[in-house]
Image (cartoon, rainbow, N blue to C red):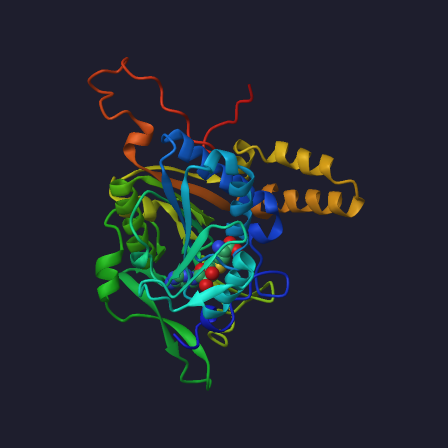
Length: 371
Ligand code: SAH
């Protein structure tokens, strides 16, 4: 806990170790803000909602979403909106506080479940927590962007003797050097974390992601809302994806622990399995398809028309390319959503199929049709 990457370093952005979509373009967060507003309208504009972000980084994504909420203030005027950030990094929570409130926050407020609170520049209350379990219940929109890939994984290798766990050992030959070894026999993890129907020879399992997605599914099943997960990942096909980044370059995961960002692709098939049918799921769908369906091309045109200097035009086009180009972030990043079953299918559809008007489509996961 004191020497971990996110407690000591957590360098997101040009001067750090890795860059993320919200840091590249404001459009990214704006379209996600629109997605939540669209779900809020589709579910009958509830009187209140919480926006809960897991691992908010520098706070840029929430800031862009809050700008959308403030632009749509007349629509949201009767709705009680609050922001809830789940963050373990003391350094990043300070940066978030500065970005979102201008630094006007109260640390360790009387309410023990939250470790900091403040008011956004647009007048919306913001609360910080270390664990999702501390966030109050209620109709909520959850957001996890590049969060699940940061959680620790177990690695397993199929051998002639059965599954063996890949462990980290001290190299007896070289001082201060770590190495990977295979467990000589099965471990509690090999017994518990591998799906019986697994066909791959090497798998990475993130049980913490399984626990968190279950908690989120239980919450929206009970109180309503939606979960949007965006991350690089696959649908149960990839094997060895564990890697490190330092100063925007690949970094040996075993060298200088705590100084590099360690990451593994999110296995969306595992998340879906862990939800156990509690909610409906949509995706994973590629980032470039999701953003296109959300109207990124229209938004880009508006921003281009509104700015007249060449440098801004260049920057807008460059960042659009970063997000959308299949060779850059367009194909490897995915969007995945959890929604209560009744959001997609009328509860009494089986009995009276013609009696109800059709449910509004979920934005982003189907083609955008302009009227
Ligand atoms: N969503 C941001 C940041 C992604 S980096 C963006 O897209 O820019 C991962 C984030 O998750 C960081 O804010 C990190 O501090 C946080 N984090 C890592 N492990 C966590 C944990 N176990 N619980 C809560 N937050 C965590």
